[in-house]
Length: 422
Image (cartoon, rainbow, N blue to C red):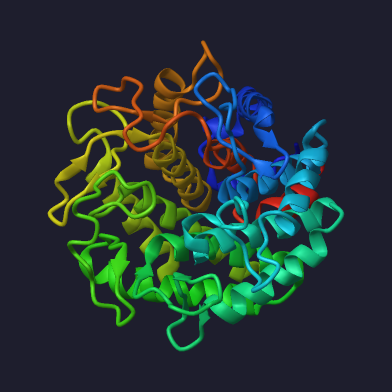
């Protein structure tokens, strides 16, 4: 893949300049793709165990299906065999068994005997990934992707976007009644990623402006005034819910306290938004870089090696004391991605140090050379664990970590891949 980095900003010795490092990234990404291919089931994609096998009763998971559809669509754009049919399978599943034909939107899994899982609640988190998958599939030329994107955006915009608040609402009942009394940073963070991708694919800049409004509220307003501690849980009046899920510290989407991995994930999203706005009009708020830098510094200070062992831990309390010491793979992937983005944007050697340090950690502890794939979670002593995440279900975070260092900060994944020389 031809390199499109702002190379003048990079130190001469940067790994990002090294052809061997880029080949290593590419090889790791292809290993992850191959490991995940058995996840296909009739209604979408299902979680794999540590050995890359489906359970006997494996059923499609809509979030996983949307994420894998996105990944395989982008990989298809790179000309990797086997990926286009899997992206096509994912689009068909999202247009079929995972879609609510009666009320519109998507369930978290196909209904069993007519009854959808989770009471049929419609989650913004899921719908953001459906829109992301559809946008990537459009770029890849997958059949059905365009109508999927049009429907996904219509649902997401009409039901979830709050123009008054400048954020996305969290969830509803199946018939779009009973809005949840909750505003979540996590769903809105992933909405920023999707908004940027959708703007690139549709040519509608309003989606970038929505991403900016989300970032302004959750980061530039709320987090910045608290030293870039990113609070996750609020009610619909934006009152902070400090005790939310105190009894569920290992919840996989809404854990108690704060998540340093999200601090750093927001960091690189801000840099990508800055780059996207600059490409669009030549103008972007100067505070995007300042806030991205503050988020990375705070996230690494809060979460990296807090208990004497390397790795970014899962959660901390309001005093930044560790709550769940386990190291999810996605936290390391997002920290590495943030270091790479800051390195590209600034050229500061500090970020080269972090980029290498985090990849060294992932290589030595998380890449599973016995059973393949990445170990999804390690304990505080860096031994395999399944307290938060079981098996090896997730392709999205790990695979994107192998691709982002090869791409410019903007445009978004699928559009960037399509625009580069292969």
